Length: 97
Image (cartoon, rainbow, N blue to C red; front, side, top):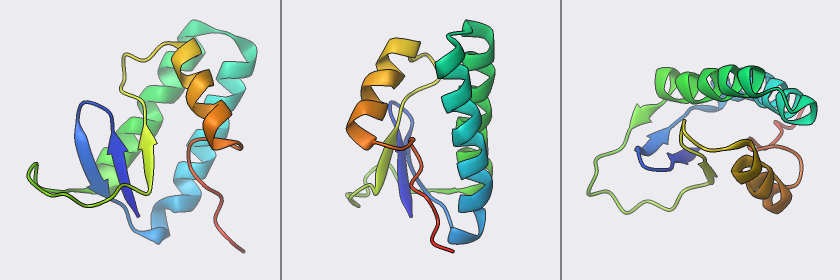
């Protein structure tokens, strides 16, 4: 799956890591619901860090379509809420059982 982190580029992440990313996405949703800025910053940072840890960066000149787009680390709570309205159930799609 190809994930774009706004302002940072694309990362190819294998399906083996999607469950962990979903866990971090759930934590981000919890932080958004609470409105706690510190919790939100920590959860967003952990999610983006995991994408970079588990993903392989694609070359800057690559024109691969992104399967999903993630906000940058400086995104506000409101900006992420707008993204979630467009996505539905979190930033990372669920993994079929």
